[in-house]
Length: 275
Image (cartoon, rainbow, N blue to C red; front, top):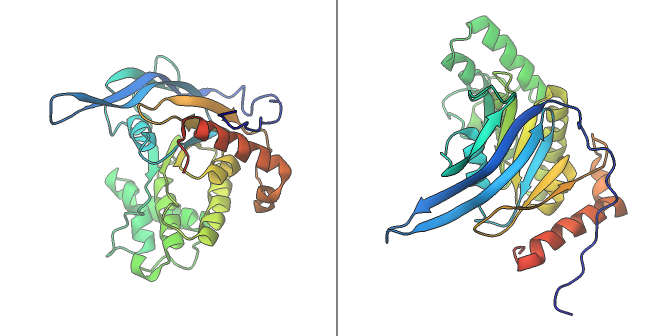
């Protein structure tokens, strides 16, 4: 008997955005860290994948499996030990503009919502009027119109994350990287933020790579889910979620959605990865 059976997802249809240009290509990407005793720890082992423009990719896996390390390599904040990343066309070897959102909003407490959102524009020398106008548009996009002059301490956790998302969009990035951005929120706020990030991703047209350890969140948000194994981690399977976006929150109670959740849970449980 041994291994429990897991549900299979519905038969695949034509992949979403199958004809879209390539946004990002990972080839045998790996990361090793040295240990104090002179050895090496393999955090991420050989990940290869192609991500197309406008896709929403979820990276799903248990805590400590290397999800965030993989995201930081994509962001260029952690240097791979081996392998390569290519952005856009094969001849394009420069790092694209990207926005990043962490679990902690990382807002400057002395700056207003407007000033926090404007910050990336200030850093690159965007003219004051232009960045102020852009920030106001983004604040409206994330549903915070009227809160422009509030300080972070005057906002709820979910509202602070909306500010962080708006800030990540300030420079019209090709790529938005999100590292468990809703992990610290309560269940109801997290559900609302899932709806918001889905709407924002569709309206902005940006490619999104979203790290999570929530099976339901990954299935709800993503076009495709990259399921990570335990360490040394690699992509165990890429699951395509063939449900039209935008998706209503009621979808989570449907049998169709449940099939994907069961399949993803089964993949995580192959070696006891899931909690």
